[in-house]
Every structure is written in C-alpha cells, then in structure tokens.
Amino acid sequence: MNGNILIADDEEMIRELIALTLSREGFTCFQAASAEEGLEVIQSTELDMALLDIMMPGRSGIDLLKDVKRIAPDTSVLMITAMNDMDTALSCIHFGAEDYITKPFNLDRVLLTVKNVMAKRQLILEKREYQANLEQKVREQTEVIRTVMGEINLAYEHTLAALIRALDAREKEVGSHSERVMDYSRLLAEAAGIDERGRQVLAKGALLHDIGKIGVSDNILLKPAKLDEEEWAIMKTHPVVGFEILNGIRYFAGAAELVLCHHERWDGKGYPNGLAREEIPISARIFALADTLDAMTSDRPYRKALTYQEVREEVVRCCGQQFDPRLVEVFLAIPKEAWEKAAGSKLR
Image (cartoon, rainbow, N blue to C red):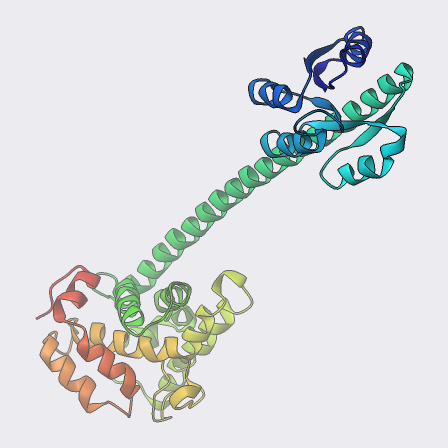
C-alpha cells in the first residue's frame, strides 16, 4: 500500500515515530510542525491522508482540518488528540475527519487505523469512478439509441414519402399534393402557435391524409365523371380506412386523428362523423385550409389553377362554414411569399 500522508504535530518525536512506522509500509510522509506549515504542504502536494494534532501553537488542527476539506476535499483526515480532549476529537467528525487516534500511541493501532481509512478512501474513489464511467456509458448508449431512433424515424419518413408519392401518382397528381399540403400545414400551424411537437404530428397526418384511398378501387378513384351515390359512399370511407391503418401504431399517435377528421367541417356538415367547431381536432382544422390552398392552386382536368387572390376570396366566403374563423384570420395574415417558399413553387 502506498500514498502521500501529511503528519502535522508540534512534537517532533511523535511526527518521526509515525512517519517511520508508515514509511516502512510504503507510505510517503510529509511533516509539519504547525498548521501554517501543514497548509503549505496541502497547497503544494497531492495528499491521500492527513494526520493532524488538534492542539498546536497558533492555528489549531481543527483550523487545518477545515483548510484540508476546502482545498482537497478527497483527502482523508485522522485527528491526533490527548485522552482528555475526546469531546473535541469527536466534534472534528462533523468537520469531515474520518476518525481519531489518541496519545500516548500504540503504533500498531495507528498503522491499522491508517490502513483502514486508506482502504475506505480507495473504495469511495473507485465507486465514484465507477459511477462516473457508468454515467458516461449511459450517456454514450443513450446517444447511440437516439441516433438509431433518428435513423429509424428518417427511414420511416422516407418510406412514407415514397408511398405517398405513389398514391399521388395513382390519382394523376402533378408533383406531390400530399407533400405540398404537409408543408402548407406546417407553416399555418406555426403561425397559429402550435408547438414543434404538435407540428411534427400534424405534418405526419397531413402527409398521410389520403392513405385510406388505398382501399378505394381505381374505377371510383379515377372516374372522370361525377360519382353516383353508391360510389360517393365508398369514397367517403377513406378517412376511416386511413384511421384504421394508422391507429394503434405508436409512431402515428395523433396523426391518425387528423386522417380520420380531415373532411370534417366547422359547420358540422363534413364526414365521416359530422363533427363541428372545436369537436374537430385543431390539426384537422388547420389541414382543411392547407388542403384547400393546394387544391385550388393546382391544375385539374376540368379547370386551370386559380390565383392566390381567388383562393383568399374563397376562404373568406367559407369562413365559419367550412373553416375555423380564427384560423382563417391566421391564414389571411400569412403573405403569399411565405406560402410559395413553403411549397417551393410560385402561386399565380
């Protein structure tokens, strides 16, 4: 066993006896005849332990104990005391001393006490190092998990984007209607004060809003003429089909709700459940405006794309019927340039 030990005592013989005993066991000993000398050693040497006489001329061993715990708090301290000063020795425990030894000395007892305290100190330092290493490992593993989860989420998003592009292509959409609506929805949600997490959920729902159309046959979905009553009833099932596809998948928590409600109207005349006003999730109310903007500014077989001004006029006309009036105000306050930047294309 080895280590650096300070022996501070105003009696030279006592210092020498303790130093000789400890040196034989491999300890490196530093001696001080006063608290002032001891403080110099503490400030210049990395110590493992200090043996401090309580009663020294000038500053006491208690003062030096406080210095030790202030400057090098990991240093273990044993107090040296006379038999008639036990109360003071015990009070030193409150200041951070590990134990005390009494005069006159039994050197074997001194050595045993020093070894026990040093062993205890070593265990404490090893435990602290283990905990620090464990915390570092936990941080590293957490970062690995976070990275993997990020990669998984990114893979999810890329796969979904590819799927949605395929669905859009099935309906002969120019570009990607779903991705444009997602970007419009993000912009409107931010302007409406929706937090980042809410915007992420809304974006997933907006991207996937028509996923239920996977269950609608091409004969109905691509029919160039007006749908009959039976065909329209089938078409109107796609929000429920989409919800059933996504519901129960934790990754899509919240998004499924938008998919179910994206054809509801503020006045309660939408489908599939005829929800009205605040019964409709705000994500679906935001989406309704974003979807209208993209639908009206995109070319259709039966008409050319409308101008941005015409869209604004239609939104105002349908305020309080199809759309949430408060969100209409937010919609109208967003400049045309912001919508164009979100979509990555110019509006007429």
